[in-house]
Image (tube, rainbow, N blue to C red; front, side):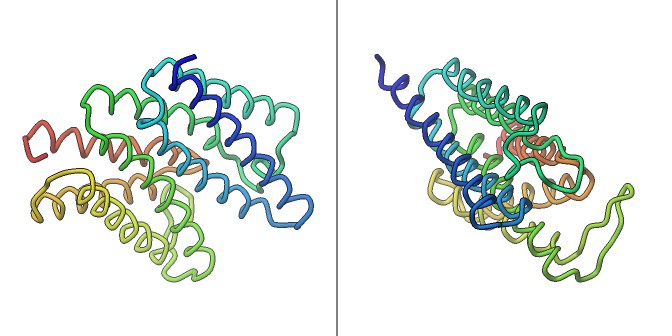
Length: 225
């Protein structure tokens, strides 16, 4: 068996262990489903960071993402995995996550630059839950977009975290000038915070990374990166 295939099996086990730990927190420790869902959201994003260095075949990534998409759909149909699904709102975010991960992997493979994978996924994995938690804890300056209430506190938190996430990745993965780091990080942070503000019911799992990818590709086409 190839190293990529073995690594795919290890990652599949890690994802199953993550789901099991979330269920343990929900059922045994009585942690609210909103918290366990964010926990799975964050750790899933971190685990998917291992895809580019550990899996060198996009078909294996497709198999992994496809398998978990089937699990998530089945859990919704048969009312399983309440640690993820027992939230008081309609959301399709769980279903969209495997789709966007595989899509970002294909884009990374096309450009052969890690930032096309890591920036979209990490901004989604870190900035989005930070915005949600800040908005709930400090409901400062609420505003309504397309019938949904957001908070300026949450949006500002998103921008700051998205900017810092991009800057740290660019500094460590690319030989960019300070100007390039500032421009790219600011562009991605602004595009993705608007995507987060304008989409609801889990669709930000699609629009946030898509916004990041569009910003990166645009800057790439103008030879800024």
